[in-house]
Length: 227
Image 1 (cartoon, rainbow, N blue to C red):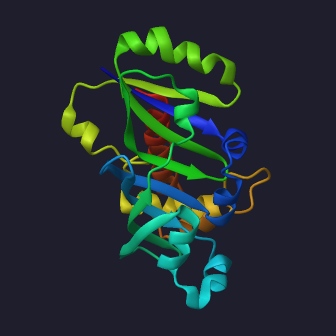
Image 2: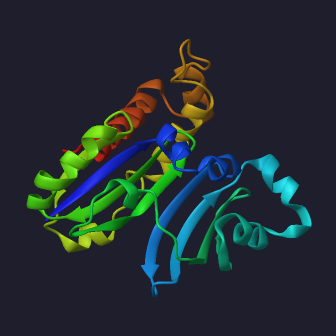
C-alpha cells in the first residue's frame, strides 16, 4: 500500500466554501479522526485562533463558539497549549469533506493528521499502488493547479504510520530558534533581523545558530518532499 501526502491550495479551499472557516481560524490541525456512525464524526483537533478573535468571543466561550462554527453537537477542550492554541475533542454532524468531491470512489482512507491554514491544506490518504496509478493520478489532472503530491511512501511500518506528525519532529530548541527566526523576518527579502541578533537572543554563537537552522531545513525538506 501507499501513503500519499497531498497539498491543496487555499484557492481551492475557498472554492469549496471554506472561506468563512479559514477567516475564523489561523490554523487547524486534525490530529486524529474517528467515524462513530453515519451521522456523527468524532475528532481531536488542535485549533489556533487569532489573538484579536479570542477577545471578540468574550462571554460566549470557546466551546460554544466552536460548536457554532463547526456545526458540532459537543466540544470539550482537553488541553490549553498557549493563549491562542487549544486541543479539543469534537463531535460533529457527519459531513462530506471537500476531498470526496475530487477523489473518486475506491479503496482509500484519510490518514490524520491534516492541516488547514490560510495558505494551504495538507492531508494524507492510504491506498493501493494500483488504484493510485489507475484512478487517483488521473482524477487529479484537471485540478493540477490546486493539488500537489508532496510525497508517496510505502506503508511498511505500521507504528510509523500511527505516529505520523503534522510537522517534522523538531527538538524543542530547534522549534524555539526557527519560530523566532521566522516571526522576526530572517527569511524575508530583505531580511528584517540579523543572524547575529538571533544568536545573541539565544546566547549562542552564529555558527551554532546556523547549524540549528540547517538541521531544521533538512528535516523539513525530507518531511515534505520525501527522502
